[in-house]
Length: 210
Image 1 (cartoon, rainbow, N blue to C red):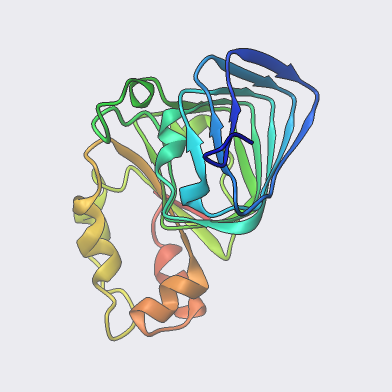
Image 2: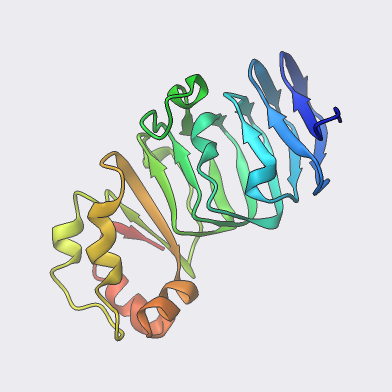
């Protein structure tokens, strides 16, 4: 750790190692020019303590031990064949160069990744093909092509006092959003309904996987 509290991984290739990013007083910076292959990364820091600057992850496992909230910087990473475990809320993955003009945000990507052991809520895949990804099962559910299917999703009545929140906000996502995953218990609280009533609507759509 340097005098500013930074722990930097860059300009190297790391293979088959376990990296524990768990010091809540450190700022972890991964990249640029970093390739991690078949590594396990244990994350137990807040989003502001983790900076991705165009690292490449191949076949890595991310064990998220502390809920990672509102973390858009996954779009500054290349993720291929990776597995995610733990809770991620409001996180974005994929290719979203418009998010920031910094150079590492121009090269983000995601493919062949597995989220089946993760709990995603309000997480998006942007600018990449969700067909190569494995999403978590119920009580999570994933809307594919949420912007293109927004008119269809708005054509039915959603349950709860605020049932229109989900379909009405789909068009507010970036235009290249390809998938959007929610955690049903949290979504049900937002709508003031139950997960069961929410599922009854979800089951009507072939563009929603759960």
